[in-house]
Image: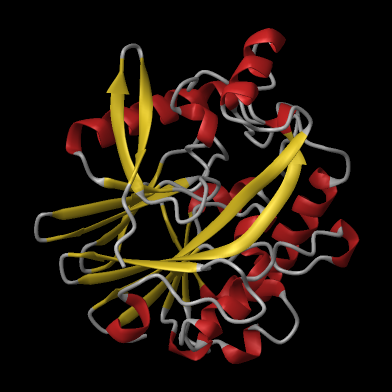
Amino acid sequence: MTLQNTSHPAKSGPEELVPSRYAVKIGEIDVIVVSDGVLPLPTKMLGYNADPTEHAAWLNDMFLPPDAFDWALNAVVVRSGEQTILIDAGLGLDPALNLPRAGQLIKRLEAAGIDLGSVTDVVLTHMHMDHVGGLIVDGVKERLRPDLRIHVAAAEVKFWESPDFTHVNMPPGFPDALRAAAKRFAEDYRSNLRTFEDEHEVAPGVVVSRTGGHTPGHSVVRVASGKDRLMFAGNAVFAVGFEHPEWYNGFEHDPEEAARVRVRLLRELAETGELLVATHMPFPSVGHVAVDGDHFRWVPVFWDY
């Protein structure tokens, strides 16, 4: 991955009408956000515990449809020193789910000039299928380094040995698909796993920290170099979470704790002014967090061409 490949939003190829990657310099560290596509889900997944009238009003104010809309799927590549780190691996290709507009990460990494064999480390914010699925696509493992290090919280690996879905609010079929993807990932990559308890430095300036909430081992990644800072928050933050951080997401295994984590991280981001990137924020999902009364406000960056 060279700076030439990553210093600006990409020019789209003839088959794509919009850019699918966007790069940021964090001091001496290169960060590139890569879109895995979009995942159409019911709007009730965002804030299923909300008052229906307030929920409908928020969707209307955001010019979103009342029934279903497209959730962005973002992954990140970080280059620090001699290490090339992939943070989350996208949805992959599960034909049973019929989601043709997602699972684009592998080909988009190639389009960005990032060879899978150059990836030295993978960091997983958690083991939901839209974060591990790209690693279990047929033929992908053979293209990765045999000494690839996959960093994931020990609590996350333990959870998926016997996952609890009693507090989620997912569409039918998703729990079974999530179980199957996590099980296959663990089986395929067990020898590559490098688990940590609470915090681990993956590379100089790249630290992964367990937050819990969304899943027991859910983690965020902080990138720091010089005066620059960026947090990849995984699934801790969703579009509705700024104005309504107390609203639950249907994929949260502990929604009450997830809300507490969300508020804590948003407060941290507002105080530090560092950049935020999150899996399901609209691509390229690069921006700042501001305090807005009792809640928060998302301030997307102006694209740097």
